[in-house]
Image (tube, rainbow, N blue to C red; front, side, top):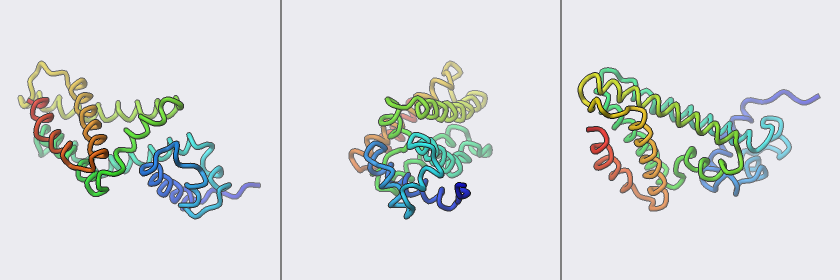
Length: 196
């Protein structure tokens, strides 16, 4: 009879494995490296995750939950003008990347580039993540239209998609250059041009 799962071990696998995958990439990180970093026997991995693909889904969920817990509330601060909330949201995420010296990039973007060609499950999860973020940003943009701060002709959902796509590009370039400059360009040029 298999032993019951230990939540602490599962959490350690997700934390250490997530760090490895963020730094080295999904395909370059094997189960052996994940379990060694977590300090558990290799066979234990499969007590918690059916496959490496299932592990990828779990670390994506952990990453998204932690990012939304940290930065999602910014978009809900109703006492702050909606366009300012959007700017602060992206500024907060830029600071998150600065604390990591721009080296790891965004796990969502990294997985989109590396894993989606081979995993429909990961691709579907990433698509849902992008849809949820589009919805949250579009809600702020609609509120800005109601307040007269955003042109009524602008489509909030398409504008939200453009913000996400452009910011993900800034994250990628910041990772390559190990520099805040792409985020500064996003804040100084992209946001004002899209949000007027």
